[in-house]
Length: 252
Image 1: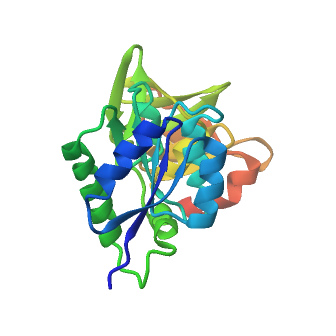
Image 2: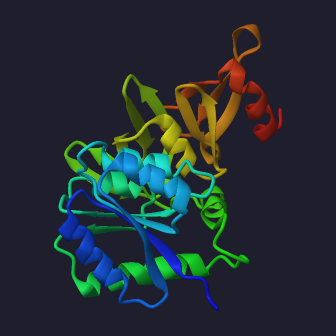
């Protein structure tokens, strides 16, 4: 008998939980394994129930839903995350967290069915004896194919290959691209986790696109700078703690 896909619903409004439960349970291969009215309760239930997917409201009474999602995704067996909320202001953060979908209230049967089909497809793509450990493997192998970043008041969705380098400046991360300087809304660490092996962290403040390296320039006291292929011929410092990795990847 095929194992049911286990869903956890997190919303501080009981009618919203009941409505979502009804739509989910119209699908014979899904079951709602639990409900939570707040973020703390959601984390406790997720650790004990090990759901395959979490439907997560953002405006909770105790914790921010986006932060709850980040904590859930750090689990050894991370669930798929679907934001189910009345607010559309968090779509960018949902995208950056690789959420499976972003459901806006009021829910409709058709929209929920589409979301469940997406969950079903993601889980079926990975053949395992059971669903245990599936999302840990998925998180390790999956990298984003797009990056969301701001250019003034416009949100651009770009291919990672367009990034020449990323630099942390204070509390913001700037992306040097062929379209100019863009602003990434997360941290440098969060950006690094999204990018594939064509990118390398070379300094606590810099990630570079390896395809954009033109030359390795020796610097003072055994340090190096990387000369890039951009029009400005930008030089990026190599931090001492990152030098071993840079040497290994670039072969010098």
